[in-house]
Length: 405
Image (cartoon, rainbow, N blue to C red; front, side, top):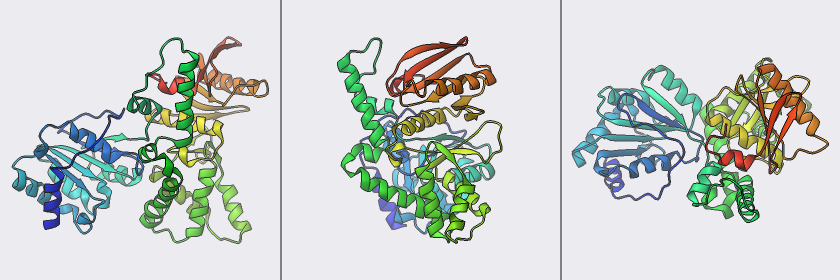
């Protein structure tokens, strides 16, 4: 306990260089505020930014359960840490509990603190499945959950204090925008990579190993390391495309590897729970037909068109809309029923124009949507086809707009 006591004292003197994120949360004592997100998307610094806005640091208790000081700490005893803070500093109003899923029995101790309704309580976690499961049972009705994603293009422009384009754009302004957008396509939005671009390859490699072995293999006690590693690599290489468990299963059979399809579907759940991958279901076809997207495009390959599509998916995902892709004789990348139909392509050309427009209009007809959108790298125009209006917009412009949907 002496180590924890010193930790609390040291925290009072710590300084944090932070910046505002687009995610906005409400301070409330009526609910526990839960911030979930993949590893290293900036959850800790999101909390630090909230703490920076609190004038009296003595009112703040911050605990990072990724640290060795809490390795053997039992969550049932969280109240002891609250009392220790009060004994040291005499006041407390804000409690921030970082990576709380690392603490055994955390929900029991947290529930006891919450029931007093004395504090603003914030918790973070890196597993959607773990936190969702616990929040839905032990803490039912006591939480409000927010998801933090990597930095958006808007956030990067804000951090760099770059002007947002308005009205007519000069060639010089466009060149600057496209330079920043090209950088975003290459380096993505993970804060650590944003700050240390020269270390991108090493950070990406280390991060993938951390997700695979700590968040999946260790957490779910996976025994077949070879298979899950190959499956992990298959999903990454398939980003912004349909995945086929049957195809991967047949590949394993060709390698004389015996593993059930049920196990592979379990692996998919593990991957999704890490928040490294997201899966998109096709509309009104059996559940198992899905496309896979990455939490950040920095983990994908060099295929620019698929990176554009992945960026659009993540932006839509932030809005927590019910998103699908539509597949008939033609395909539409994203549909939000009765609201939006969106097609994403690097460039509209004579070769692909008919296919892309046909897929979009087919979805628009099905969902009775009057206006469709085609997002490209840097084309902008209006198309009228069979009575339907289609806006062709650069992805960078769509991402930088205040209301991109």
